[in-house]
Length: 256
Image (cartoon, rainbow, N blue to C red; front, top):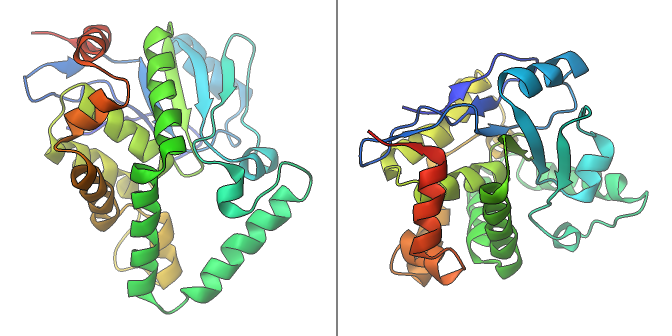
């Protein structure tokens, strides 16, 4: 079973509650929410999340250009944390008023480059996912997110722009920590396409950049397993030892 879609004015916002682990336990509801950006939500919808889901903290994984262009809707009582996963200079972005312009130019160039090159686009996206596995800065940011998540009270929501890539990998890490099967992890990752009502094949090659593809997540796992014996070892060697994992599971799982 994948995460459960929350019916709001954005398409890709989901509660991880109810996902079953390999041991037959379940993730607790109303604690872990993955999402796309929140700029389209009304304050009334944020109050709904605050009251029904006990939402108390939001982690925004986007870079400076993204959150400057589309600021999240925030209400009093919910803590907002800008926890960008990648450095701005990974994309030659700056933190000044030019950042939005540079981001647009970056993606416009990508669209021109891969307009009719499906294999090239898939290779590009696989390289991006490999970077999410290999970049020490990125790993440190994910690990610090996980540790802060564990220490938080109430429900926490984390998101990037579409809720697919950076938030997708954060979800992979959470589900691996909680002992969810690889099959279920892939199902939840690919469920993003259902949330956005995507039908394959797509009309334009460049649109494959904005969907969840098995090949992308494959690239992430391939890099992890090339550098470590297992995902468990990856977690251990980056600061999440077995004692932490046990405590994390105690907090977020319902044991049968």
